[in-house]
Amino acid sequence: MKMIDSHAHLHDQKFDKDRQEVIKRILEGEIENVINIGTSLKESRDAVSLANKYENMYASVGIHPTSFKKDAQNEFDVYLGSDLPVVVRKERLKNIIKDLEELIVNNSKVVAVGEIGIDYFNRDGREIQKDERAWQLKAFSYQIELARDNGLPVVIHTREGNENVSYSAYDDCLEIIKDFPEVSFVLHCYMGNAQQTEKFLELENVIFSFAGNITYNKKPEDEMNKVIKLIPLTKILVETDSPYLTPIPHRGERNEPIFVEYVVEHIAKTKDISIKKVKEVTRSNTKNFFKIGKICAKCAKVI
Image 1 (spheres, one colour):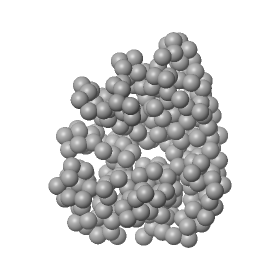
Image 2 (cartoon, one colour):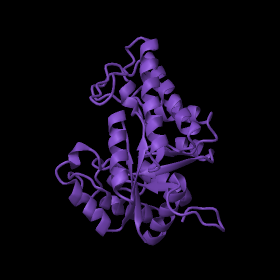
Image 3 (cartoon, helix red, strand yellow):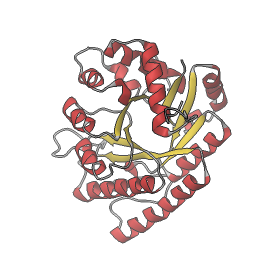
Image 4 (cartoon, helix red, strand yellow):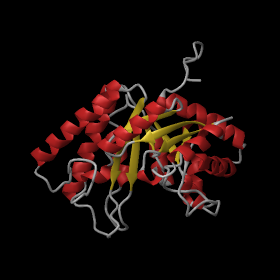
């Protein structure tokens, strides 16, 4: 049974020197499909371009939430930071969304909008300001509308802020997606706690994706292991987030899609089920979420 890497960035510059070798390992190994995820207009175009070159690859397009922070530096897009006048930043985002929609309409390999969402973390310890938070939430909603209007699911990036803040990225995310019951969502690189997970599980249109960082949990009682046990396997996807979040035993190296096997193994061990079962169910989940593959005439599911 082959696996699917539901979230990678093979168009990233970290693969520029040996991308063909990485792709060769994918084609010769146990990876059936890779979904390459955009984080800016340029990155989205690059993801689409790569997907169009290989039959087993697909793309998702969107603007990462860090693009909407105050003083955000994004070398690939027109500046969208929250310190711009409202009318200016809305017009700039409107134009970028038009470009994203053009990618969607003109490329059948685009299977989702993302990664989009909410990110309240700052490496310098600075707390997200009220206007930054509001702008991120608006931009998130606008891009969900883009997905809804084009019949696509959404890949969500959510990252909590620094310690001791009075708000939660996951809580804010939940409140927004509640307003879009007609859209399917996957919480990429999920790191929510058990209480938050129970709330997301109440929504039928939400599933969860786990990356290599779950292998960093060494004790069965670790919070993320509790969360993995809490979520039904039918609501789980696996990913690498390549070139980031390399799993143990390759931590410290550049990540790549073939390492998704270690994510599968950790989920199987944590849930006390077979690796084969995790491969089988997560493969089916991914195909149905992104609507890739052939449609079964009898069951109306993707096979």
